[in-house]
Length: 327
Ligand code: PBG
Image (cartoon, rainbow, N blue to C red; front, side, top):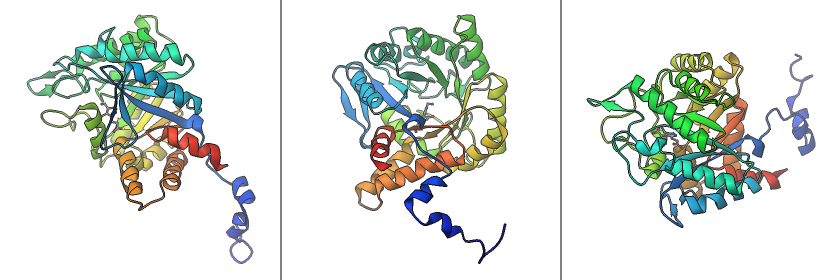
């Protein structure tokens, strides 16, 4: 490449048209997955204090929310359930009449074409708040695998299109794949939360789902925030176990992991722009300190630029609206 003064990079920044022509990364509503919290009760739209704009919705109000998202062009939702009763085994998670199973049916009736992805985990359903079955204060990996398989089957039977295991148990993708296949669901993809870090950014989510662990923490199963080689090993194992989509979570503090995964793996990559990342922008913009629209679109673009194909974001509806008027 020639150097200055023959070569001048500003030539390609001269006006909007030329900048659009050379833009390397594009953001579209097709990239977004909208996470939704479903709760028990009737006619509930319960706002979550640490996540302005996001509500816990009961089964009768969730359909309208999904319909609105779909009408904005959003193709997929990710469902989390908050059951009426939590217990040691997280029984509501695999109950055919459980909160998520009922929500899937209601959504399917009103918005048949939306892609329904379900979070497969136990922490929202267990009274101790851990992501698996506990014994003597420890999460038992292999016992949890059986339950994760059961949960997945119950979601797919209710009508889920994709299951997304987020418990960070070893072997969870393989166990779920074989449970699904044995039950005839060979066509159901698994979106694996492959590289899920033990992150402080999940704080507002745990308020929302009331799923903070009642003892200990999640560091015996979620990744150490300082590690990237282990993250790539987690992804490699999930690929070997037939994951269809791999996920890196959270997004912003882990853009290097997204980029390294993009270089090494061919599967589609999802990235979860998590609750704490959402709340930080909301808080700063409500104080008038930052330009919410500009910063959100910049952040979402950066996640794509790092190598993600799709983004799970609480900003999905707002970003979809902004993108309609932006170009
Ligand atoms: C369930 C789960 C969590 C999130 C997604 N799935 C919470 C956790 O691991 O504590 C967090 C998502 C967010 O912060 O937006 N295991």
